[in-house]
Length: 380
Image 1 (spheres, rainbow, N blue to C red):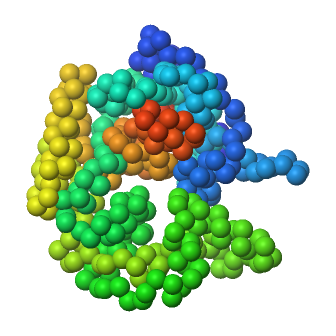
Image 2 (cartoon, rainbow, N blue to C red):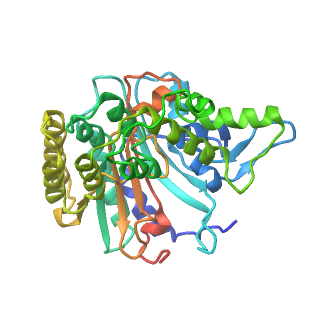
């Protein structure tokens, strides 16, 4: 396992300084996390990045790849109505081959939990600005703050006057680029088979979340078989589910497909990017207009918090390795490190709390910073 170098104490203190004085509770979560929980929350696609551990006869576990879910779980177990938590510790993710990147690394960050109806509407941008200040404290002069919105796609789809079943499908697969691309590819086609023609695929298609991959693993286990060709249950289940939905769901028109493809490609300064989205929207755009108007207030607040307008970029596709974000998302990127190595990241993840057994109405937002990446003399 490749271990990240240690920072000079003064540099680490400067990066941590924006978090000091916030009155946050220091969070201490276990180094080892339940594997099934992490995969249920983040998706099977993360499995190849995890360090899996298992005692003889015990359940599979993994070294923590991140702090958000463990801190959220700890908060729920405390039964507290609200909470503000700071963390600093090691996280672990396997790096792609031949990259030489660190697999054991330091993270620090903040998680904020609010009861229903009490959270500031601008808590998201306040956390984003906090992450920006911490990242800038490391000494880099090539940083930009990329903003996204995991909820904006649903509002955009709603503007296109799609058949309800098609709109629901697009929203459901919004964070799965391969499935979205399959929908764009079959634009202009019709349903080719009736439901039930592929019984296993139809059964898998009706399961929520990662249930399809889980069921496929159980079927293989009972039958005493294993897949061949290097494909795992998640990939095979995804292909079967895609085929089932293609039979059941009407296709996009070519014009609608062009609008969706255009939305996914939007990026640039926030004002120009949001104008592009307006231009791509359909006629039924009142919900989308409200969502875009909310961004005007967010951008104004970011300016007041000291984030330079010239440093801002917007793309609705900004996301995380973890797919539980459901509102504003952000990444602080370094030009030297590239988009796939953000210096800081975070966003809103209200829905995660309900998935962990908490209130379905509670609010949650957080950020993490990679101090070594923020350090001006860090990895290049």
